[in-house]
Amino acid sequence: MERSEGNVKTKTPVLECRNVGRSFDSYDGSGKNEVLRGMDFEVYENEFLVLFGAGQCGKTTLLNILAGLDMPTEGEVLARGQKVTKPAPERGFVYQKTSLFPWMTVEENVGFGPKVRHLPEKEVQERVKKYLDLVGLTGFEKSYPNQLSGGMRQRVGIARAYANEPDIMLMDEPFGHLDAQTRYMMEEELQRIWQKEKRTVVFVTNNIEEALFLADRIILLTNCPTHIKEEYEINMPHPRDYVDPEFLRLRQLITDNMDLTL
Image (tube, rainbow, N blue to C red; front, side):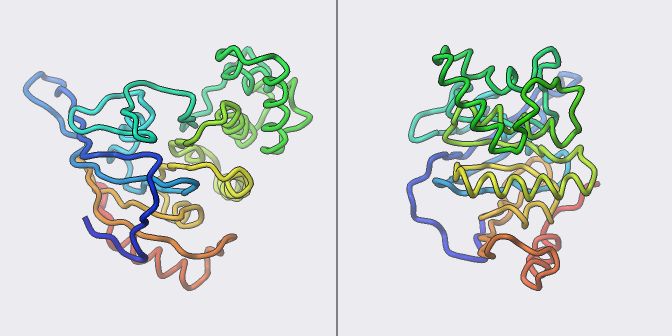
């Protein structure tokens, strides 16, 4: 595995992916379909790491393993030195689709996790207020998901994940279904939220502009069986400009190195 565009970090990792592989039984029972192979990387405190690759290359499978929603067939994942064997509130998850409970109001959706963990009601309400304010949805507490726009629903999903106050936030192409303008606005919002909260984020995308706009570091993935092709340290200051010469240089560099989807 090559590393470029910066120096390898020497800080203690909060999340470690150690030689992770994942295979599934083939549909006809004739063998195994290998999706992930030899995935080996670390994620550091307060880092915004982007896993970038073509569509259908196994990014979501990898993120599910990091979350503890799926288990590897080879290797292991460690969170602060402890093996990941199941989901935990220390690892928040924001899905491609918002997956909000349609029968719950915005505040009920955001407070669901803390309530399930049996936190005191006062603390639940304080967290709901804090994170709805963080994502700019104060005043929409009593609204239902079907009364919100796509971007607003995704903000509720982000607030819901933050309300558990996880160490690590895992985000699976959360803006992929939004129109271009709303997606750009949500990228700016996410950057603002991350700079204010400074949690560790692992973000999956197949959009190079989105990756460069958000990332401290980009891990470029190959097509299946997916493995790491290269890593890039992104040292541009925020906020970033899509037409900045350095942005355009990195965009071309990474695009030229990625596998094409057939």
